Length: 120
Image (cartoon, rainbow, N blue to C red; front, side, top):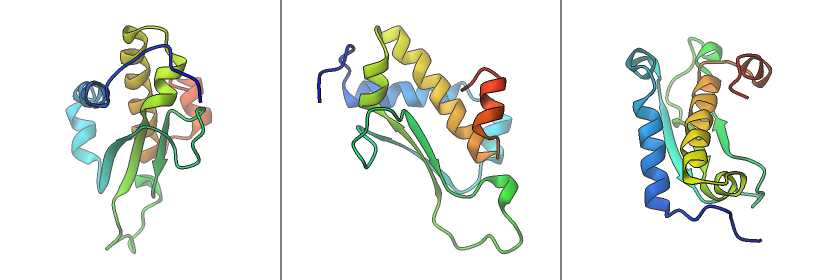
């Protein structure tokens, strides 16, 4: 694996994810349910093409029998994000886009609709 154009510590990257979450409207955060947001260096398969991943059951798909399950996971991947960015400002923007994109999946919005809205 080659180097990344932007060098950034994991701590700084985690701070950017936190800052992106701070920009999400509070009324949306209040209705997010049973979900955790994590930062990992790489996806489990080690690929560099995935910036974020939502794993779980979207709010729109939860029925009366949704109970006693582990939290959904939103994972933001540090090294792939750094690889597609040229500057720290690009990283800030890309992290914000990725966080919003994955939160949208939690609300049941699919990739096609996100691309239509400019959050692809």
